Image (cartoon, rainbow, N blue to C red; front, top):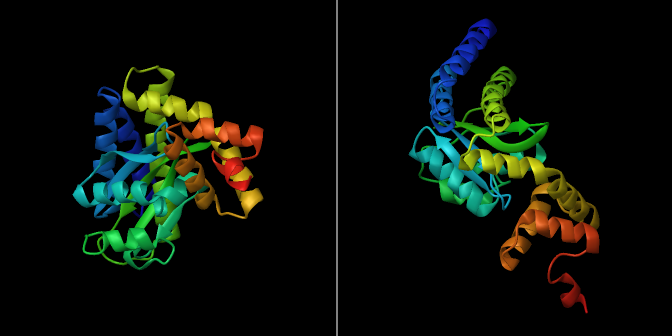
Length: 239
């Protein structure tokens, strides 16, 4: 990916070609081009839904979709950490990374090893993750990560344009909801971290579990937590 000028030119060309197609088609083109530009095995885009769960929107291949699906199910992995912490998260080999044992077990036997997650942001908040992977263990270089962050800006531009235009589709509705309520969810995560000594991912997992058990939205549970100081069932359990 060596030449920064060449990368910038590729990004401009992608943005121009994406202007005349649907949002999903534009995102798919950008993801497919990422594989070629960065000479990686696969690439995908995950965005948060109204429950705060990450779901893949587009992906370059089957192993990439499996990686994204499994991360959402077990609530761990580089893309989950990237989304919650709003920062780049990388691993040399996802199947041998002690941070994510459930994901490591699930990905053994698949053609996915080195993974990097890059936050996809709108209005400064992380609403998802661009994930890129190789099929062999690999240590990601700083210049590669910097270039992927530039590449994520193309995706952010496409999403921001769609939201501003108030396009009527599921992805835009999902993004608008996430934009409206991300701050409340972040405050709920911070409250649990301070109260219970949790990591950000653990706190988010607890919020999400409480929302699922009560069949409510994560933001509603977070609002109740901030108002009452407890999650559903905690008051009853302590009495």
